[in-house]
Image (cartoon, rainbow, N blue to C red; front, side, top):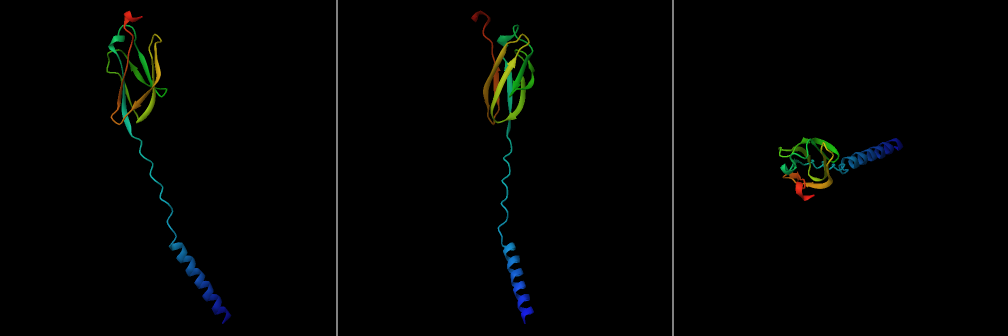
Length: 120
């Protein structure tokens, strides 16, 4: 009789354990990371700079994105939407920036300018 009680107790405990594990809430599902949305950042140099500045290296967040000249279509890069730092340097050493720029979902056009020759 004693052996039979032990078997019943063991069976009841096992049934409880299986039931408890089967009814346990599932582990929380991790939220998927929000995909990074990119947009075009286009940087041009004003044609007013022609004849004075050339081979202008453009940087976004300290990373070079290309070289452009006044009046050309410019250089561009796909960047995450949000705040960035823009800077440039010409062959003769003229510096633009660094300055902040905000890239929206629609993209951003930045135009680097020069002072008129007679303004100095």
